[in-house]
Amino acid sequence: MSDTSRVPSGSTLEIRDLHVNVADKEILRGVNLTVRAGETHAIMGPNGSGKSTLAYAIAGHPKYTVTGGQVLLDGVDLLELTVDERARAGLFLAMQYPVEVPGVSVSNFLRTAVTSVRGEAPKLRQFAKDLKSGMDALSIDAAFAQRNVNEGFSGGEKKRHEILQLELLKPKIAVLDETDSGLDVDALRVVSEGINRFRSNGETGVLLITHYTRILRYVKPDFVHVFSAGRIVEQGGPELAERLENEGYEAYTKASA
Amino acid sequence: MGLDTAKPLSTLHEKASYDVADFAVPTGREEEWRFTPLSRLKGLHEGVAASANVVVHVDAAPEVTVETVGRDDARLGRAYVPADRVSAQAYASFEKATVITVAREAVASTPTVVTLTGSGRGAAYGHTVVKLEPMAEAVVVLDHQGSALYADNVEFVVGEGATLKVISLQDWADDAVHVSHHHALLAKDATFRSFVVTLGGDLVRLSPSVSYSGPGGDAELNGLYFVDAGQHLEHRLLVDHSRPDCRSNVDYRGALQGQDAHAVWIGDVIIRVEAEGTDTYELNRNLLLTDGARADSVPNLEILTGEVTGAGHASTSGRLDDEHLFYLQARGIPYEDARRLVIRGFFAQLVEKIEVSELRERVLARVEAELEK
Image (cartoon, rainbow over all chains, first blue to last red):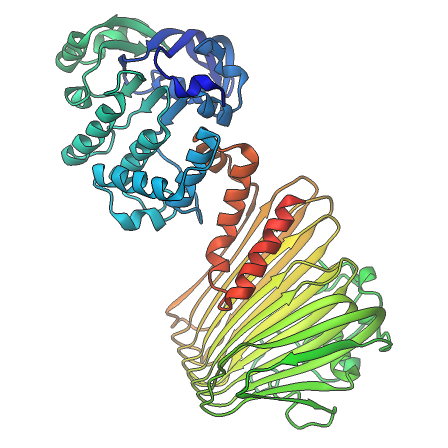
């Protein structure tokens, strides 16, 4: 880990003309977007528009093939790095469908992840304290730490577990892929509060991918981008989300068809 | 099984005899031998004479009686009749047998550890009987070490309401060849727990089987194996449900790495006409860590009654799940560490079932060592 990881202020994620294929089909067709520390960007769009592809391609999922463009985090091209190197460089992806990992306990997983990202093992007592306060803040039961990662978790538990990781790993840039999907109002509020705690220091950037405007009432975006057919087709401020709330995506899906 | 020849025999368990001559020398085309590389048996299937010893040392719990007996001892061969050529050869060839007895209602306060140490290249044959009288409880460890060409039979006789937990470690040297039958006969309401760990040896072919002499018997057969390049590790399970209201659960998991690493798992379960209320499940999972490894996994469930409580099986063999690795790596965990975590996790739920904590640690340490290779 370089020293810059401890000085997150001023971090910038720059996505430049990103083209991505899935199984030889072009899904992203030239995405340009810059997320700076302290900013929250919402990416909204209809199902199948490529929003999740953007998230997974940035994180480096092997299913997604980048055919062109760059993704720079503070000038370093993430696309040149392995998945774990990207995470250690300061990128975090909260997944829409977090994966069950049989036989690996939450506490073991989190300690291993924190050790990897910080480059050294956390002091056991401090880690236990951080874990407990993190879990309390997200209304996660203490017994949760002994369960296997995402195994038998409800939809709400999975998402809270993602946000717990976000708060423990303290990335420079967080990409949240439909973190609101499948949550009831109470869980949505708890999860949103976690995201707001994470971004409150003003030193981190958030890219919030969502289909619905509901979460944006809790997590106020600075910028809203409309995604359609693999690229950003419109940009604006929070007022754009309100317009989408009233008018839906119809105008954009027609335009791209 | 076997002893009661009046009953119709299942197709999964065709033959049993004490006489070697009742079994033809296998050619490799037979169903029960087709996965085993016969040339590497070094004559065990062709009647090679005993010319070496596997030294048996027993560190017994104070409540347990250990005897070394001759071939004529009446307690030998009562629970099990050899089911194949090598097993019959072993039965015909051993000179001394070890009989471990836990008296009625006795509860062994410590595990009884039987260490079997091979010391040479010649063939050796053995026989062991572990007998729990009614209501007795014991943990027995069979720890196989060293270099050997060894065939043996082990009988576990579990009396009414008794509980026997067995851990069998095949921790052989790289050149060892071991062909073994473990048969458990469960009386009414008996509990049997078997945990097999096979790590060492050039060729290990272990056939754990269970039969019941009364209702209410409960058997769990767990197994863990780690197959390296060139190794052939074969486990052939048979649970013969012939009494009502008995339970069996089989869970074998293995990891394979390296050229010509070969795992074979056969899981046969018979539920006979009279075995109403049977509850059985068998599972085999193989993790192929590299190219060049091969896992054969064949579950067979033969149900001859319609009145079962549960009967099922599952078999999966595959590579490490990319999604698991991606999730862990996306949290900054390097590939090698992520891989270790997933493999450890694959075995974790099994290893937790090893009752003896020192052995649990030893097995975990051995798995870790395999992962470093």
